[in-house]
Amino acid sequence: MNITEYIELHRNAKKKIPSEIRERWNNRIVQRGLHAMGEKGAIQYLADYGRGIAAQKVVTLALCAESEGYPEMAQGFWKKAFELSTGEKPSPREPHRVTNTIPNPTSSKSKKFLDTNIPELPPHLQPGRIVTMQPVDAPNDRSYYIDSPDYWGQPKRDGNRLVVIAMRDHIYYQSRSTRLRSSPSIEINQRLLDAVAKLGTFILDGELYYRSITGSEHRTGSQAATVNIARGAATTQPQPVYAIFKALMNSCQDLTIATEAERLEAAQSIGKYLAYPEFEVVPTARTKEEKTTLVQRQQSEEREGEIWVLHSCTYVGGKDSRKYPMVRTKYSIELDLVITGLTPTTAAHRPFGSIMVAQDIVGGLVPMGLVGTGFSHEDMREIARRHTANPGGVKITVRSQGLTESGSLWHGRFIGFCE
Image (cartoon, rainbow, N blue to C red):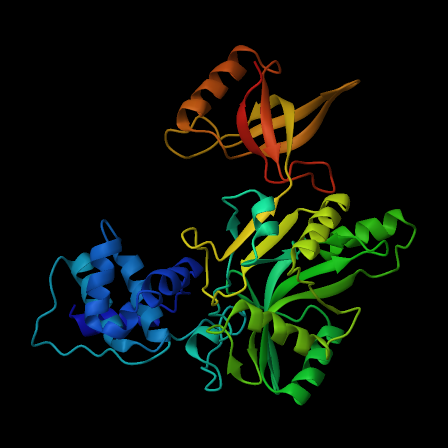
C-alpha cells in the first residue's frame, strides 16, 4: 500500500473527529500558530506532543487539519501516520494527494455530521465541529473572583450544553460532544427562525434545561415531569428552556475572535427577539456588588455554583488550565458513608470499579449511589482489604457537588477513611 491508498482508505472510513482532537486543534495548534506553518507545523506538533502517539490519533489530526482548511499541515500528519502504520516512510517520488476536503460524514440517520460544508460559516463554526469553551475548577476561592474586576460571573445552569446555529433555511443544534441533535421543541425552532429572518445568521452558546410547574430546573424532561406528577399536574408538559450564555456569531460576524464582553453584549441583543418562556439570557454579574448578590442567590437557592469568565478573553474551545479564562466555583458537601459493596471491573490492576455507599441513619442504611473517583491504586487496595475484612463496617468520607433528585450522590469523590 502506498501513501495515496493509505489516505483514501482512512478518508473513506468516515470516522468522526473526536472532540478531544478538536480541543487539541484549538489549544495546541491554533494558539501557537502551527496551522499556518504547513507541514512544518505538523512536525513541530508531533515533536512537542507526539511521544508514543498512536497512528490512529495522527490520522484524526490529519482529518481535522483537512476539515479546518489546512491541507499542507494535514500532509505532515498523513506522512507520520503512514510511517507509524507501515514502518516505512513514504517515497519522496511518490505523489500523495492531500486536498482541502472535509471528510465525508456518516449517513443522515445518525445526525452526527453534515454532508456538506456551509460556505457562509468559517471552518471552526460549522455545525458538528464547534468545540465549546469549558470551565475548569477555580484555582482560587470565589472571593477572588468577586473582588477581581477582570472576571464576570454567571449562574451555573443545571442542564445540557447546546450550541444553536441559526440560519434562514435551517436551525442546527449541536451538543457539547459535537453531535447534531433534533430540535428541543417546535416552539423553540420557530422562534429561532423568526429571529434569524430579522437578524441574519447567528450562533448561540448556551444550555438546554426543562422547567417544571414549580419553576425548578432539570436536565431532562422526564425529571421535570416527575415533579409535575408529584404536584398533581401529570398532564402538564415540562417546559424546555434554552438559556443563552453568549453569542459566537451575530449578523454573520465571527465573535470567537472578539472579547467575552462583546459576545455577552451580542447575546443580549439577540435575546430581545427570543422571548420567555422558551428562552432566557443568563444574567451576567459585572460589578463587585452584582457578583456578591449572584453568590448569595446561588447559595440560597442551593444551586450548583457559578461560572467566572475573563471579560477580555477570546473564545478558545476546550479547557484551559494555564490561563484560566473560564473557571467554575462549586458548592460541595461532605458525608461520612458506609461501604456496602464494590462493583466489579475488567480493568487490569484494579480490584473494583466503584464503591457502593449508603448513609447510616436511624432505622437503617439509605443507599446513596456510587463513588468512582478520588482514590489511588493504593487507596483501592486498602478499601478492598478493609471491606473484605469487615463488610458493612467501613466508613469513608465522600465529597459531592450535591444530591440528585433521587437522593444519590452528584459526582461523589473519595476523600479518605473515617478513623
